[in-house]
Image 1 (cartoon, each protein chain N blue to C red):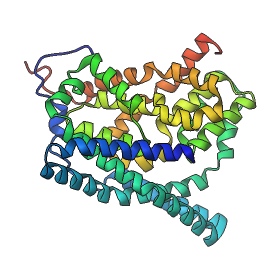
Image 2 (image 1 turned 90 degrees about the horizontal axis):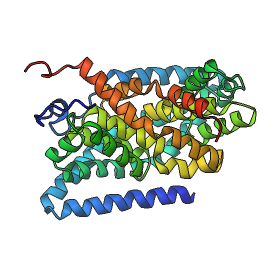
Image 3 (image 1 turned 90 degrees about the vertical axis):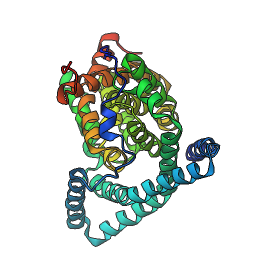
Image 4 (image 1 turned 135 degrees about the vertical axis):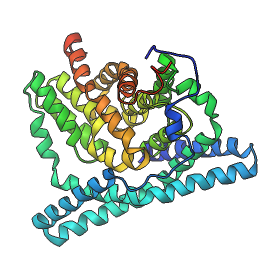
Amino acid sequence: MSATLFIDITLWGSVAVLGFMVWRRGRAVALSSAREGAMDFINIVPRIALGVIGSGYIAAVIPPEVITGWLGPDSGWMGVLAATIAGAVTPGGPVVGFSIAAVALKVGGGTPQVIAYVISWALFAFQRLILWEIPFMPAKFVWFRAAVSLPFPFLAAALSMAIGKP
Amino acid sequence: MADAPKDPADDSAETEAPRKKRKPIGWSMIFIAVLVAISVVLVWRRDGVHGVTEILYGDLALFGEILPRVLAGCLLGAFVAEILPHEKVSRALGPESGLKGLLIGTAFGAILPGGPFTAYPVAAALLTVGADFGATIAMVVSWTLIGYGRAIAWELPILGTDFTIWRILLSVPIPILAGALGRIVYDRLYPKKGEAE
């Protein structure tokens, strides 16, 4: 609750500060800039609607229990691979993703595998891609960004294996 | 990433430069729509109409909650595009910005307030005012991996301090590496005037 309040305050605070900076460049600039932002908003609403409502149904088809099964204590590189795929297909928001990681740690998942899972979730979670990244960014950029990010859950797992436990 | 020919007449910018060509309904959205339609049918066959409407109402509530933040994010994106001068951005974050550009992108992503509703509109704005794919990748990846917002709100309480700090430390090099890899691949995929000298 307080976290979302904090987010809203910093968010609208930033809007106010930047809006003021634009305003100082003149009324016309500020108005056209605000109109630009509002038009973006109007354009994006249908995409967000599809994303929000759609990912709810996709999430319902992929229950979290399925994901947890992928993150068992089987360690090694196959475990890292499974964790990376699991991170990408994890439905829901941060609570689901991090809770699954916490469960995996509890039932004996290795740290490198769970780190690969969390990083993969942060980089590729389909819900965030569908709901946020694709509506706002050029699609070409999104796919490019995702493709280029592919090695990194593995790299982080390798680092974690090399350095050992915290 | 260390390749830095002169000529700040940025090239990636001219593909994106004209302020906002709004996105047409692309294949990505069609793909998602198909995926959603299939999922709706699966939910309906499993849980009946009740299951379908239950998800619909829950998600509509979420949608209503998100909308004001999306508006704020769009305004933020537009203001950022207005305030940041094109030449400066393409010098600091453009294709010729080198390692410094990737570092700036990483730092910017790490300190950006808010959630996805700010990160993506602002990243899109940076692309339109002259940042290249590499620096923007660094920013987006940095926001998602080492940004403090999600870590403080969710990761710390659920996964604990040790794990979170460890995970973030391991993540620190990733935005820079991803941005550098992005530039290398981009140059291979879309060779511009590089060899035309």
